[in-house]
Amino acid sequence: MTTTAALGTGLTPRQADRRRRILRAATTLAARGGYEAVQMREVAETAEVALGTLYRYFPSKVHLLVAVMQEQLQHLHEQVRRHPPTGDDPAGRVAETLTQAFHALQREPRLAEAMVRALSFADRSVGAEVDAVSAVTSAIVLDAAQLGPTPSPGQQAALRVIGHTWHATLLAWLSGRASLAEVRGDLHTAARLLVL
Image (cartoon, rainbow, N blue to C red; front, side, top):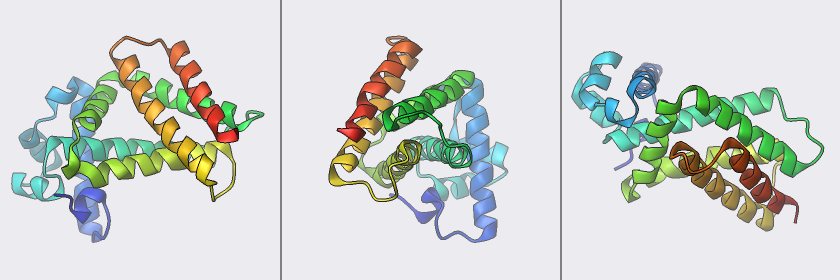
């Protein structure tokens, strides 16, 4: 069950503030102790909301942590818009932008692990939130590539592949199965699809 509150849409200023407090509390707990540290009761207490209120905004921990991931990606998107990458080609700009995102995640590995685990555990009930994460990821890639506002059908397919590659490399990196150099190489390879 996805609510507009879970997606952050159609909220009054007071509701939006409550949602921000909840996301901030979950982010703090995840950064401190990873996925297991995000307990709904503790999130509610830290955010100073009733437990029932928390569940109205986020029906589960997975919903909550996927929303945290969306918020983190929105911050990255704002940075890309303020400071666009300056590489010579679209693939290089995309790979560099997503590599910078990995560097940011390295600074908060427990938070990264919590968000990626939640995204991996997401079932159909979290579909709208997962779609929002995918949309922000695609917007980041599109802005980094600097190809214009309307991607061609081939570029839209490439955006999806890059998003899938980014998620897979996140999992591989977090589990210690891929180095940052391997991640960078995989992202660069996937990003080349934008200009084929």
